[in-house]
Image (cartoon, rainbow, N blue to C red; front, top):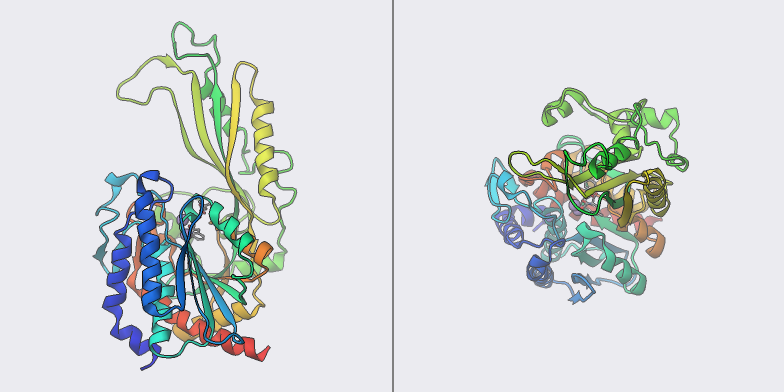
Length: 457
Ligand code: BES
Ligand code: MN
Ligand code: MN
């Protein structure tokens, strides 16, 4: 039986197993789900064992366990290290879901559930591709699996794991499916991810909430101050005003930008999908560039004062905001974090106190199109899609990818199969069955091409 025949014979089984995994609410950010997070790890480990790995373990950490497994077919053959994550983002707000987020629902050839695409659906394709190659006796490369449960909260434990277990993790390529393709007719390979600096700001005015009539106009309102400070961080050209913010931003040549502009992108469809009249961003750059090669700053949440029903005339004591910047090469996440802390400490008036707490950061990543891994991924897409994939720079972040390069010195290949319209992190996240099955098929081709290309060079 060929791998494709095996895949076609087992479509229902492959789907039902993924649905079982999606029923486990493995939300890494919320302690309430710790037991479920562990159950998801066990599920992945058990399925890997059933598919035929030599051994599999749950590697215990300070946080959630890492699933590690391997199959060595021949020590002299190339080794593929598969990375993915079994944890998911919180499903809130639940009331905006058409079906409960952890009761996966099939509709219009799509799976609706939290994690359907990010990253359970995409990660599980690798488990099923491995099963397919084992069952048809076509696995050419050695495989190591490293599936973590803390990607959505900053990958702290995995960072320690890769620093401590370098020997065990030796490989020729790291294969990751946790990104998107342009659309189902236009395959692409991600060659850039943005980095991240994330902070929380707390502004304190008076030592207690006050009557806004008795004190208003005479005492600093921390919400007024905070919103002004935030607004001042961007100018009318959509640029971040922090001194030095753009100093390390890699500039692209006109030729490179013209190349990037060749990727199909329909701005009207984009606006229609989001129900917006206009896009907005840094002047002088296209939407693809704003997301792929330019940094940005966004408020992720802001609160304070009275937000209940009706009105309450209050001058609040405190105001809060969660702020993130997305970074590009060669910006340094720690330097940007310091820049933002300094900004708030320097610019806030004496009438308030400021506390800034850094959360997780992440280094941007740029991936070469000249490696064996890229060539193998490109050939694999050609074989399954009949089209050469386009290299793309994506706006999201997978901070551990830069660490793979730095610590393990192994080239990561971002061969994702999601779509921007899968609504990852949003209510009604979904993943197309086409993408799930086509992804499994493409992954099996990757192994063959990587084996051949590695042996030639
Ligand atoms: N899979 C995403 C990242 C992603 C999505 C990259 C789409 C490219 C296209 C990942 O799970 C994620 O959500 N990362 C977080 C960062 C993390 C530190 C919370 C992000 O980008 O917000
Ligand atoms: Mn992900
Ligand atoms: Mn995510």
